[in-house]
Length: 178
Image (cartoon, rainbow, N blue to C red; front, side, top):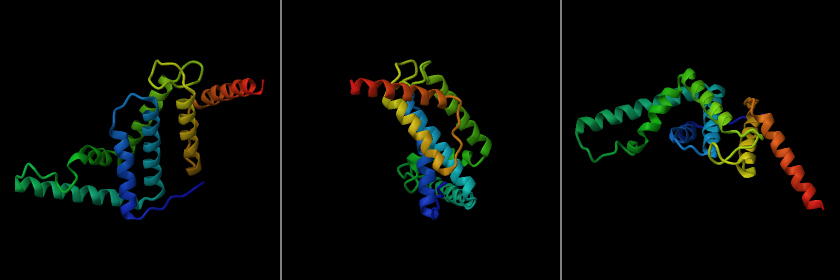
């Protein structure tokens, strides 16, 4: 499988972007799979490069110091050196260092996707909608992309998704041929 090595700045930015995706609460199926992808990549990076946990801790500590300093200055207009709007992301990153919290997040996203999947194996844009080939293909492709990092994506809904796509592509191919 592929291996990703990140220097300190790129590691911080990658972890922060993955966490940013995880903080949004959209009920759109493609965003739920993006959250799952982000959580699995966050976990992969922390497990494959243990030094990233130290980098994460160092940045979170620095941000806490900056925020404390700002509060001592009592200036409500400062956004503590550009972190202001990112506070939710940083707090989540701090929580995600605990592998139980990260595993729980991943489990919840898998359950959400499972519940969103229709009986025909396809996925709708929104839970309860009609299956859509584009969103279903996006979900299947996204999960398969994780395999290049040897991240296990053998979720019990994946086979049903593959069968849905195979059937749809086969039907469309037959229509195009005749």
